Length: 164
Image (tube, rainbow, N blue to C red; front, side, top):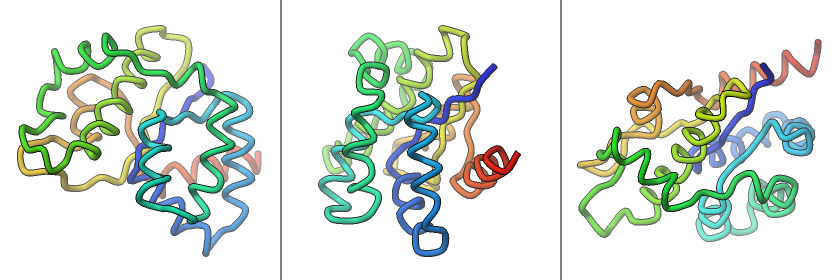
């Protein structure tokens, strides 16, 4: 099975920092996105536009998201399926609405695609702490039996696959 990597906002932030060390990373990301092997939900892209305005990752993400727009759509029903098993991905606090929206939609996208069973899925997240009452993206993935990677592991895997 071909892998699909789904990025959350924390992965986007890490990739943005990685650009200074390894500028070719965006060429690799472009290739993955055009092949359909890299996705992120609209909420992640929109968060980048707000929080990482004029950063390299945002300048890459806006056009890159057009390559897979229909595949990365997350419905209310997709989110409901995640919340049945991982309700702690949401927090009662209104302070983190953007953070939890991108987290929920990232996990919901991965969960929906996992149910199709056509690809090996990896959620890429560097989220270590979240709001007080919310589990991290990686913790939600574990609850739902989804695989997750940190950004450094993702970069290593895709660099090795490009070299092969």
